Amino acid sequence: KKVIVVGAGPGGLTSAMILAHRGSDVTVFEKEPVVGGRNAPLKLNGYTFDTGPTFLMMNFILREMFEEAGKKAEDYLTAKRLDPMYRLSFNDFELRATDNRDAMKQQLEKLFPGSTPGDDKFFTKERIRFNKLCPCLQKPYSHLLDFCDRRFTRAIPYFSLGNTMFQELGKYFDQTALKVCFTFQSKYLGMSPWECPAAYTMVPFIEHEYGIYHVIGGLNAISLAMEKVIVEEGGSVHKSTPVKKIITEGTAVTGVELSDGEKHHADAVIINADFSHAMANLFDPGTLKKFTPHRLERFKLSCSTFMLYLGVNKVYDIPHHNIFFTSDYKSNIDDIVKNKTLSKENSFYIQNAVVSDHTLAPAGKSTIYILVPVPNNRAG
Image (cartoon, rainbow, N blue to C red; front, side, top):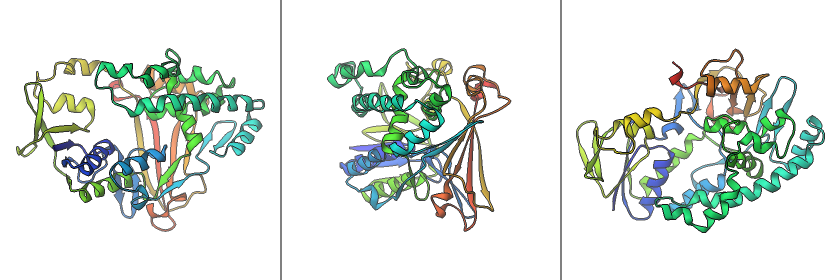
């Protein structure tokens, strides 16, 4: 089978390396000069930044991805477990979250006396949720009958439908600040913990149960390693090669047309471009019946981020991950998600990766990555 992959983000690269290993003739087209998509590196004067994700969770899934391609992730990547996982800084206290259960419970009991039983309940209940839902996330849902799968039907109660993450944390903890410590992860999804579905409460559980990792060279090194595997398995990756259009015949996709007019046909095409961009720009007008421009305009969007990538002549004695909360976190989140306005006081995140990885900056210097959640650009 000849397979074309549009976009060399992590999803496209994962698909490409597994399919190449299984014997498909795989070609990847990427518009940028480097692979990675939203996981691509930014390099300048000896400094290397991740432009996208900086938290690596579920490292065992990363290993499985490489195993599916006949490889060992350890032969391509060095993953370092972080402790503390991150520093959470509030106006009146600071928590250095760790996946060491005893050390974490000691901190919680000191900051929030009487919280230990709730912490134990959190781990017991969320471990069950994770074990029920994780298998459901690892199967396809291409047909309605897939939703009748026994694993899925048995997992339905654990979705806690109708509840939000913040409401779900109320089953374990009373203090608002403590609930924030276990719900801020909804920001990974660009969502408010007061709106994010309760099923995602398993995300903080995953962090505390399995730890958070840093990949030496930055998380972008994962994409670079997958590109290498694709080539080793006989596939090809064409960078600086934008796809102009998806070629269709009737209801079937048969190939792609590149920006230079060259056409490539295939038995299957995998689109790893941004979804709404691909639907709006890569198909001839009128081709798509479901995802029309009008429907895309009505989609609800997640928040945006204001970013700073700073190469500085200093080394800072702070943890790898640092999150700073406003005095009124809910109002800040509501401004971002609901009111679509800038808050007077903003929560923000700082990554100080050189504390774990000296390869990212020249000696005695640092890469400082600053992320501030802000309203998306529909706010004007």
